[in-house]
Length: 238
Image 1 (cartoon, rainbow, N blue to C red):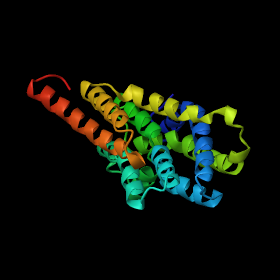
Image 2 (cartoon, rainbow, N blue to C red; image 1 turned 90 degrees about the horizontal axis):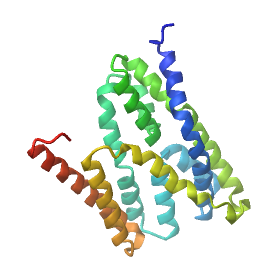
Image 3 (cartoon, rainbow, N blue to C red; image 1 turned 90 degrees about the vertical axis):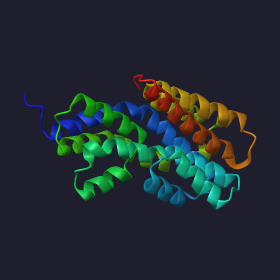
């Protein structure tokens, strides 16, 4: 059976992204609840979630808005949280850079951590895939994730106030991030960046408007870059 078709990678992508549904559903319900509790209407919540499609940045922005943070701080923090998307894009450019503009625009809009993680691994395993096959795989990974993210955000926004506090849906946030980020810490630079960012963020947790997260992220990036520089200087494998 020939598996080298543009359709086959799509279904492979959907299968790769399917396990993330288990965390996307509670995560999106939680965002709907948090957003409405922070004062956003159902309409505003849905506009935000469909346009942004960035769970971490959305949670950060809503949290800061509920704390009355200045708009500039909200935007800067959300952008900092989503800065990794720029690195994702740079990483995927060798694989998808030759795709039609409309496909690249759609890929950029649908960029999520899970899709990037699945796609980057699949591209490494299938170096012979064409650009169309790679794009097809990517769209497969988000075919379940994004619609369910939007649908269950709506559920959370509508029913949020009716969910009993003992359900403790906030467990989905740390679990999701641990599941996403843990496998990606594959080098010393990655681990150094994570340790430094977490440490600095915790030490500066007393700062208002979560500014400590911004400083921690910057410190983590500097630490990771420095570790890579030192390893390269010593001729070590990065």
